[in-house]
Length: 108
Image (cartoon, rainbow, N blue to C red):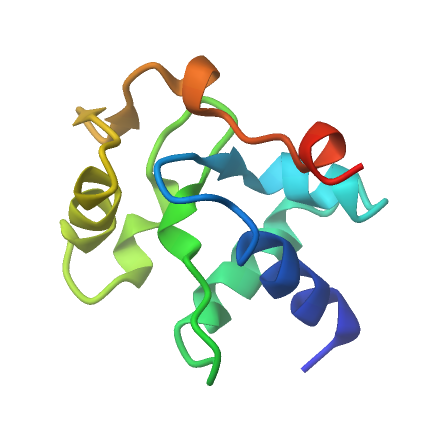
């Protein structure tokens, strides 16, 4: 497993319950702004880590649950977020801007 993926997992583990971030925000925080897709690939592998990675808290830049196909069922990502109090409508986080967790500001 690459150091990049491990770094992504470490950042994702810091996202508080009930908050979400984006692939791009994680990439920017790690100093690799053009690597949003690599963050997505890391999220695909996160389900196989021995230490839990809350990948359901990572969405696209518009709050869309684009990674939902990589969960156990088509609704599992939404259910995990809703269990944390995040409202979802049409596969999109409601009030995305107020729930957005930016590692650039939260972790500095």
